[in-house]
Each structure stands twice: as C-alpha cells, then as structure tokens.
Image 1: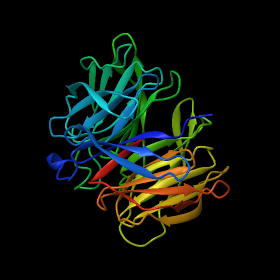
Image 2: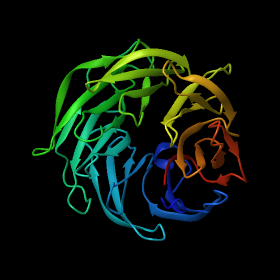
Image 3: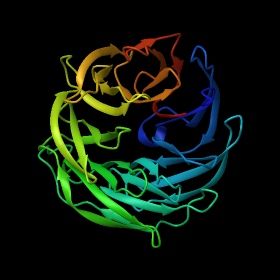
Image 4: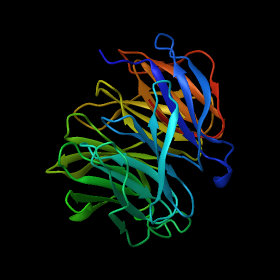
Length: 344
C-alpha cells in the first residue's frame, strides 16, 4: 500500500518574477482529510516555478525561472527539510519545467524564454553534473505576442527507452528526442509533430496504457487527443478545455490515478474540467469551480486533488469521488503566496 501521508513541497514565483513567494514551502498532509498544514519555507531560492522528484533518491529539483536560467537541487529530509546540493545554469532563459528520465540518469529542462531543452547528467546520488546538451528550437507561430519565437514549455520523458516528447508553445509543435546515455546528448527523431496553428501547446499527459496522450492548448483553449504509434503522436481530435465563456488559458493536464479520467486546469475562468477517457475523444463529465481564477497546477495524492492557484495565493484541497472522478472541495484553502507547482 502506497504511503499517501507525509510531505508536499510547493514552488512558486518570488519577487524575481513579480511574485510574492519566498522559495519552496513544505506542507504536512493529513491522509484522512487531505488537509495541508504549512511548515514554512524550507528553501529560499529564486522563482522555483516547477519542481521534480528523483525516482529513487531523496532529491528534489527546481527550475529557477530567471532570464539567466538555472536549476537547483536539494536532498530531502524525512520531515520535508531541504539541504542544498547546488545550482547549475541551463544555458537558456526562463526554464519553466523539468523532468527526470525513467532510470534517474538524466534531468531534462524546458527553457521557455530560450525555446530550448537542456540535459543534465545525474550521478548515483541524483546530483547533477554540468549540462551535456542544449538544443534550441527554431521558428515562430501565428500569434505575434506569444509565438514570436520558440517557447519550450514541457519535457515528457517516455517510459523505458522511448523518446522524450518536448512540447513547444511558440512553434505549435511536439518534438521527439532520444537521449544518448553515453554522451548525455539529445538525438532528434524526425519529423516533429505540428498542432494546428495558434493552439499553443503547453503540457502533455501520457495515459498509463502507453498508447495515448493528451495536450493542453494554452492559446486556443483546447485539449488535443493523440494516439501514440511507434512513439509518434497522431492527432485524433480536439475538444474545448472549458465550456465557460471568457478567455480560457488551460494550464496543467493530467490523468487521474486509475486512468479513467482526464483533468485540465483552466486559468481565466478558474475551473478544473473532468473528462471521461473512452475509445473516442475525451467526454465532458463536469467542470468544477476552484475558488480562484488562476489554477496553474494541480497534483493527485491518494484520493485527494490539490490545486495551486497562482493569483489567488492559495492551494485548494479536493476529494475526488471515486465513481464519477469529480473533485469536491474539502476544508479551507491553504494560504500561500504565488504558488505555481505542487510536488507530493
């Protein structure tokens, strides 16, 4: 039985990016009610806007989303305290996402401002070495404000040795790379997969069946459904991320723990949409108010869903109804300045 109690780490924006946070906050989770109790700031670091955990070692990683991009790493103590291991430049501006290879041997970073992907090798203890590669995407999209150049927004390492998928909002594309484990360099797998112009793909969620994935379209308020054939995503269709009026900017997209439901957070309208995953396109089940207008990220822990609302300065706890997949708010929100990522 998985241990669903314990500690959650929460990253956010600091003054370096116009935010109000101070670094990485730890919170203790009560498994029965899902209630979070803040343990305060456990690492003072600049704009740790996205976090990742090593698959086998007690190490936490964060991007530092700055014009001169960096990552930082900490050893995690049993009570959630963090011991600083170091900080390394990514070679790209405004890193906004990072993820670990399945075997824990490499760390991949998406540099939003730089439109690039960076690779760091990790030693046996999960400590990064100097970066081994930076690959820059070229081109632009149709939106003159948001797609004036490439903007890598997420890296999704495949299970086993399957390709790394990199979602680029600026050029409406999903790139595929293999990692050369010996050199730590990325090898391009052609061709890249293009969305319709102006979608602005942001994040990608892989279904546990290994055959499907879903992408949030930040600029056109969409969810795109893909079938993976030999590791290549083939688009099967599009649905609206929200049926509320207004300017919808989907952010996080994730598949629930049992693989039956797809969840999308919608900034601007302040909702999480639940879709049933069947043989066809995702089907709308419910669209739930989060209580704030800017839900940027969420995470599942046990039977609970935690939503980080960046502009409402809070993390909201929901209990997910097992039969319907619908999140129901419980308790009081945890007040927290500018939260952007939650890592169980």
